[in-house]
Image (tube, rainbow, N blue to C red):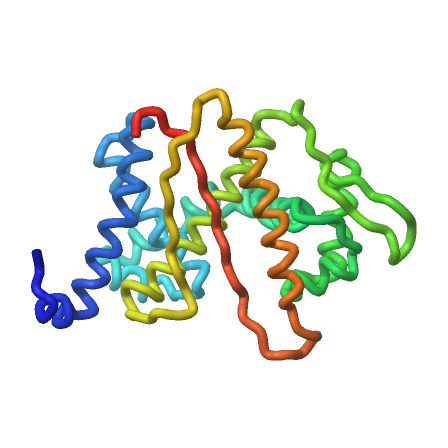
Length: 252
């Protein structure tokens, strides 16, 4: 066991290394479950690093210097990502429509209300995305004009690819919240404004469905209460990220 003095002396680099190890263990577990060998996992980490750096607006030179690779290799990685995981088509499939579905999962909203909840999105883009979701019968519209409300349609027959994309986007956002919490708590050493909670509760196998209903009901109520904390337009505000994962793991 480390002494209290040793714990206090842990520097930023060591804090970051330990936080990274904890985070990557989850990735290693997914890789092992899907049969991805270490070479491909290393490539996936490299792709994810470049992806994150590009989204932060880093120039290719800075990315290459950080990764320790040549400018040509960095440019190649960037082109490959933009043709694949970062392509406009893939991003559109994963981004705004999925965000709207997530927001409407809690409760029906008008277009004006969604524009308040998602202030960084253009009104015209929200309107276009909602129209597409209604046409695809993923969202239901009630009423007309500016008072029309939109609600999520839960379709058990939804195509597998659509369900996969929706779940993937949810996981991406949940993990983004987890990454921000890890950075605040274990890299910067801040007690607030972030926390990590985890619980393991024995549940009878035949009652897992009930457990899911309890979790979803609690999340709906929680999201509603959090949305009630939003201030008036123009007030100083922060984006509170909350990611929820649950799994009934018989293997432990």
